[in-house]
Amino acid sequence: MLGSRRSRRRLTTALAGLGLFVTGAALQVTTTATPAHAATTHRVLFDDGHAEEAGNADWIISTSKPDPLSQDSSPSSETDWTGALSSWGVALQKTGDYSLKTATSALTYGGSSTTDLSNFDTLVLPEPNTLFTTAEKTAIMTFVQNGGGLFMISDHTGADRNSDGEDAVEILNDLMTNNSVDSTDPFGFSIDTLDISSGYPAAISDSTNEVLNGAFGTVTKSLIADGTTATLKPADNANVKGLVYRSGYSGNTGAFFATSTFGSGRVAFWGDSSPIDDGTGQSGNTLYDGWNDTGATNAALALNATAWLSGDGSTGGGGGGGGGTCTAAQLLGNPGFESGSTTWTASSGVITTSSSEAARTGSYKAWLDGYGSAHTDTLSQSVTLPSGCSATLSFYLHVDTAETTTSTAYDKLTVTAGSTTLATYSNLNAASGYVLKSFDVSSLAGTTATIKFSGVEGSTLQTSFVIDDTALNVS
Image (tube, rainbow, N blue to C red; front, side, top):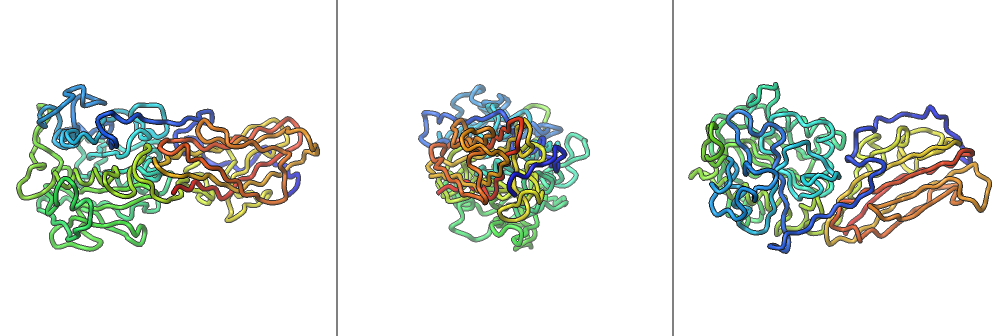
């Protein structure tokens, strides 16, 4: 509609606080130097910010945080690091191919913290015992969607170690079903509210599976000592796969260890923390050595899964902070805005179904400015581009203006990717329909960058910048 002007009382969308921890003013590209000892270091973050040490739990790789190397820079034995997960950590460290850190504060994605998820390939959640905040859930889900690996380790229902009313089953289910990115069963499974006292769940027969048959050994069985299982829902995510099953179960029920994908990332689930307990840790905790249980192959399962999640020696996966082998994918979340106020961070009313400006497809679009008075709108999303990829950003733009000048740009839309300005449009670019815009952003491969649209309108006569059907394709 030529020269349409919107009222200041525009449709309000509840976007504040959602999205990817990227403020309207923050345009940054985050890169992480690779340690000199390995050509391709896989970066793994173990969470310790959600009561992982409550009660008898000691789910840490080292008491030195965030960097376990401060306790011992060259561990040869698991007791060189202190924690019930030190066997896991030391085994990875000794390969020379992993960089390990521990997070003790809120999880973020796209921020400046050294433990920000954009700096890692895999996040391990070892039986969290406090709920993730709304912002943390957005960060975790976006990290996976953009290529990160997520390792979720549960325990039996009722294992509320800090007596706050929440256990790992409830907390991990809440992450999957109550987040701003995708709450429609994104991984294709739910965790069962069970307390299974004991057993040795068996691995399926699949000689090609990288988790069951990886560089760290062949998986035959695991250990369950008061744990739970998952119910798989392949109709919601066809990539979900049960790898280890409780005795008497198969198919979609009784999965003790399962894997899946989400966006460009990978997910692993384990139904008990007992298999990762190495029996040693801080004094005062009652620990058991499930890691070396002779009836199971828990070490191989944990280590192979970490390698798979991090993209070690496999195609796809990994790269939540800029690593891994390139796999063709479209990386933007909610690219056509049809999920409303999710994934993007935007000014109030930008993502809208208002009939005053038509969407190119569907019902939603992003409408910046259009007030006819001094105004600024922004729309942004943080995305990790895997290393080694060619990348193209594209979107459809419709510019509608009431300005009559043919020479002066009074109202402007600036498009940036990280710190690079890709283009600036103005009232001089007004056209009757949508026009496809496309940019090569391959130079950002291996980084986390903010894709941002900033619309600035002058004091009189409206100009509307309407965006739809965005995409960030890598190959």
